[in-house]
Length: 277
Image (cartoon, rainbow, N blue to C red; front, top):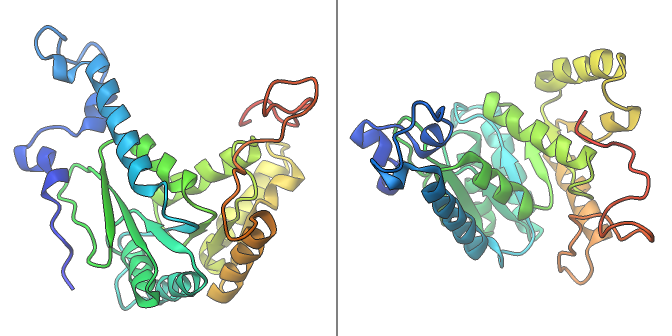
């Protein structure tokens, strides 16, 4: 099936202009003066950013339990990783989880297709890129974002876990974003599952042999990751964590630490880590 067109997200590409993210990150010396074009000024962008958060919250606040699946956009449909992602998403869907992806091709399409196979909610959070960007045909709810950080908030806030298949820089970005949030106590009871032991072996060896060996992370930080080749094992781990931390099938607010006497709300009395190290 061909991907769905996404004309509202491709304005920059079609008009040969820079994307909103690119303009946001421009040096102030390069940006146009507010007097020349207020809609390209930072104060104006604050309203656009607020609008994206509102749209994301409005669309996702009532979706129920969901899992975000990441992986390469370049994975072909006949690749074993595509089939594994589709199978994983279908198993999650059969257990009552919606599926959230970046809405693009490759592993993202596989996961949305698996959700469709199971009759589960299939969500695509798409992003404006310098090249034409469509939405894969298996997305039921499509939300367009122009700012990466807004989109990344939605991936974490409305998911019970991450499942990460082999991918490139974007996949690595989401992986380490999740690990940092967990390590610093910003999110809790949040499984991060890497699928593909051969692909992830080098990274895991480096984490253990370099980061841990040199004291850049703590021994328990290594346990934040689960690595498997089995979709069934990945799904079972996520379901076990969800059941253990939710009651009556309703998601608890588990994103902050419990109140500790004598401290500010949600702040541990003796934090193990003061920052992301």
